Length: 140
Image 1 (cartoon, rainbow, N blue to C red):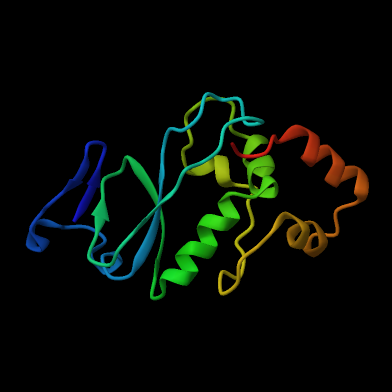
Image 2 (image 1 turned 135 degrees about the vertical axis):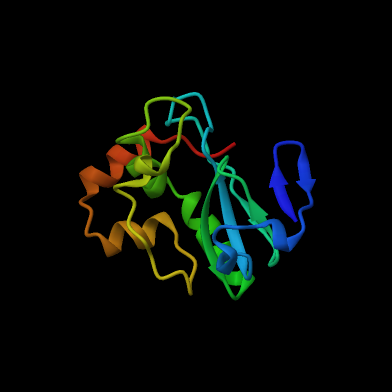
């Protein structure tokens, strides 16, 4: 399977020349363009794709992972205000190239993360937490 804008396309495995080792496992795909540049209201909508899938450079890929639970935990992390706030420090337009995730720390994805857990892990002060909560609107 190959993910593309219009849905799923198919390609013969022998025609894949790069990153063949990434085909196995679950992957999280993030489009390189999302939102309007208004990070307080824009929310990322990642896709989880099955093993034996690939994508074009239209997507940034996280993974691969052996278990779908880990991919689900990655997606839940991307849905936190903490994640979105850190992205907002760099992302000013709809373009979301790899560099906009520079300040986003990698987590242990064997477990799911909430904003409260992340605030505690990184010792954020009540003032910092309040700032993030006011800056990033809840997901619709």
